Image (cartoon, rainbow, N blue to C red; front, side, top):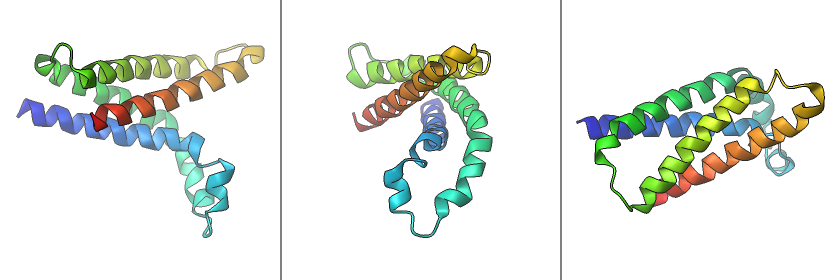
Length: 132
């Protein structure tokens, strides 16, 4: 039962990560090219508004996922190592996101790029974690 609930928290964390990462994916030109109905313009304000909350929820759900599955961890399993790496980088992304507005102006652009790159890295690692 705890195993199933923990997996459900993992699914919720993944949904929140997808929502948060869409802030960086939807404005891309390739997405705009195929958006015939203008859906991106409609949903982008909501994504921008709730990006921070989705990230916070992703971290909370990921913590419950890791804590719940802690007794089921298998040493040497590749999916466990990838999931743990994704969790650690997710925590780094969250911390970087919290301090992004407090950075001096000359470092904001680099801080934003780092936050975005690490967020995409988390997304890729989570996809690998799910695939294995």
